[in-house]
Amino acid sequence: MRVAPNSIRNLYDFEVERDILFFKVNRQGLVSFHGVNYNLKKPMTREQLTKLTKEGTFAEVASNCYVNLLKVLAMNEDSVCLGADSTGAKNLPLTKRQLQGLKSRMMASRRIPS
Image (tube, rainbow, N blue to C red; front, side, top):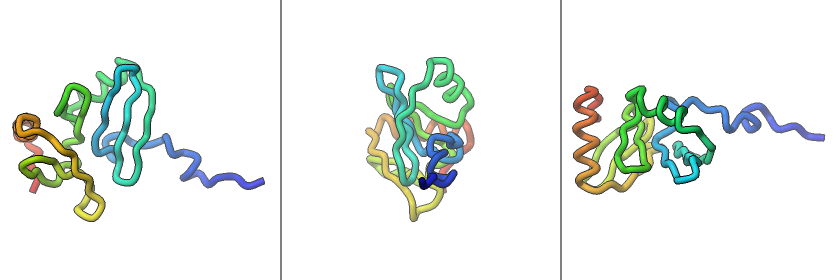
């Protein structure tokens, strides 16, 4: 019998601030976490979500979408580029209003992309 290595078995054990670019919440409390090479869905309670968003790492850009401010690389006129570096970046399309809100939130927390 073969056993999966620890890296595969512990796929759901991730560090949110370090590994997640953005996440979306649906009505049933199921959260879709989006990383560089993966998307994971995990149920979370309202208290867990509140704690996650109150720490200041994630900014709300839509009613159900939160962006990791530490992972913002650049902002275009219709999207935000997220990732650790430009080789593994993901683009998240946003409206101009959402981008403006994200810019003001980043300026308030002094996390301005280069």
